[in-house]
View 1 (tube, rainbow, N blue to C red):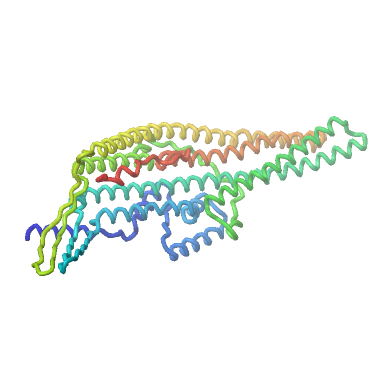
View 2: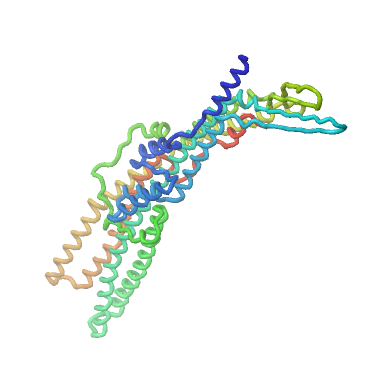
Length: 464
């Protein structure tokens, strides 16, 4: 009776595993918000889709900012939402691991010479019941790892959205600038042509103005295509289509901060906070747990027990039990254990590799960030103001009839490279700032996939 009661209690507990209210989405949103400042919305129903669509439409009514671009990407990027489905798969696996496998029922009937014999049996997986707590813990670790992986994907999309936004705004600025250059080149080319016809200009000087006009035309064409390419890159990461493509960008990039970021203990922050490092650590732990389960079931791989009875015509019914046990005659479990140990060492080495790379990427990203900040500030505070002073001085000389209109236009040509470099330096700063923040707490700024453990490490906890 005690044994029966214990078995009944175990069976009751085995059937109690259930789905969590949010499917693990709360933890994903928390991890993402810590690193991007934006929560994620995992869309599982039509209601969720409608809510997200309403918010997307509201955001698109105003010119985009870097923050609204990130929010749009987290709401509307279909690839990201597809990757969130892995979270639902891990949740289902956790619930399944917390429930005992369904019993099997067998029925047999033999008849002859006026005698009928009937066999009936119900068999339960006893080994699955004994290893249920460990298997449930392994599945729980896999769910936690899936949550970190989902946050890892979300942080990657957020970083890509920010970089695409800055690239699109800078490309739009360059188009506006090259349109002005093209207009000035057109005017100077037409003036040179007329002066040549009047005999007041040399052929060589006229061809120089014509060459400048040709270069300006080519540069504008390239800038327009680059603006289209950068905008479409932003469209893809935001998941926009149809009427949503009419979104507006700001006229210029944000102003540079007064002082650069000076992160403290940057390398340690990366080791503690980066999601790819957390994934690697948890992967090694999950594999180690799986190894422990494999060792505990090394010799007994299949163990089933159940109730059986037998009835025969004219005879009283016979009751009993049945046990099925795999005999380790050819495989003593060494292959399963060796496989699990190899998977564990693989996870350990990958964890060390991710940690080393994380430290290196933080150092490299900070160097790129400081270089981009110093260059952008150099153009803003020295190069561009100096060019403006030169331009003002040339204008004064022209107004005093000390220089010709072509000298004024030549000065304008010299400013083209300066202004272009200044816009690109500001763009590079904001991209470098995004890469630094990503390298500190999120993932590799290069966009490489996180290296978690092989799923089979925990997918076969007992082996077969």
